[in-house]
Length: 104
Image (cartoon, rainbow, N blue to C red; front, side, top):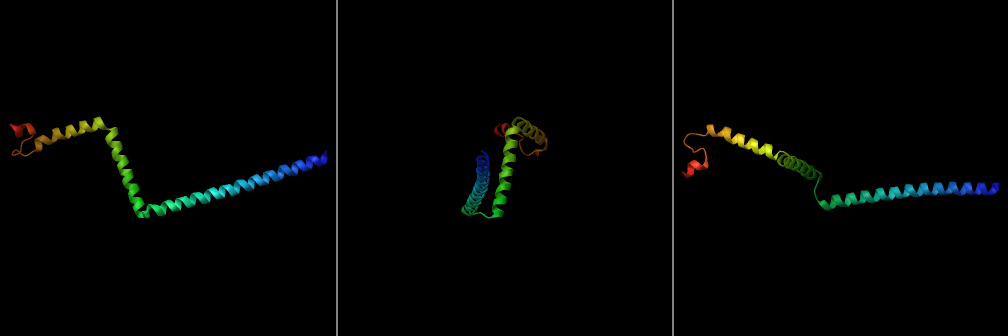
């Protein structure tokens, strides 16, 4: 019975080593494939790092503008109306203050 335990232990040890190696090889293969895909994607896009940086900056600005337009819709409309109302007294007397005055 002692010999069977030694053989079984040896088989378990070899299995652990084999699975460890297999996992390491598989991880390296996945990393290689990922790097290869990233390289192909950067080559196929045809843009340089400076252009990519500009595009990223513009995308961030668009996100900010979209957030301003959607988050503050009512408040923004109120601010625009306040600006219109405060700008009317500053209009030169030669020019009509509103469209109704131009029609009359």
